[in-house]
Image (cartoon, rainbow, N blue to C red; front, side):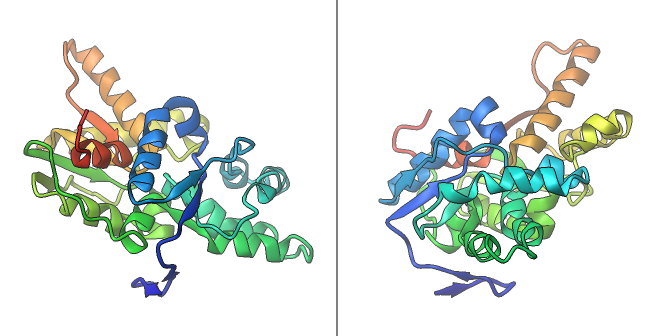
Length: 266
């Protein structure tokens, strides 16, 4: 059993896992979810996708509605009955399930133990690839320069900036450049961007500027919310400036890894 720097223990490679796809992947970026499945299946793992899964409850929780968040979380609890890892292609959703589900049910004598057991089985995708599967595949892509953006939850609650960086560093033809103020938020913050649109716009505009300035051909992220926010603002700024082609492109890290390490890259 492996331990990371924070002392979390990791299991041996399993034969089966659950995929908790997240709302954004399911509704807006299904290819990223499919690429996550391809990465896992290539390692000989059977991936199970419970069709009843919905939101993790984070929007309600972060907006100050714990009862509503608890109701959403409760509907997920029976979807993962086998003792298999639950792999999540999002640090923010993974953090909600691993760290905040136990808080929501800490006083529940019936569901509390079930929730804590589930939380221990939740792994963010890049974390799972690095610490459990020991990802190592030849880079079949052309030379490129990318910048990594890590969501606030993934960085501060899951430590996934380290595992995302390790995966990109393992690719021989990929140069990783760092934008200014790399630890700063992209301005999305789930419901924050809806409640405070002017502040969110200012934050994401600064993030787009820093990513453009660092010389990256593409921004890679393990969180679709951040990625959509950054690329959407970049596209809007391009439109306002009359640019005919995108000044900033991006991709979920699952798709980036699969495309560069597949024997038949897209």
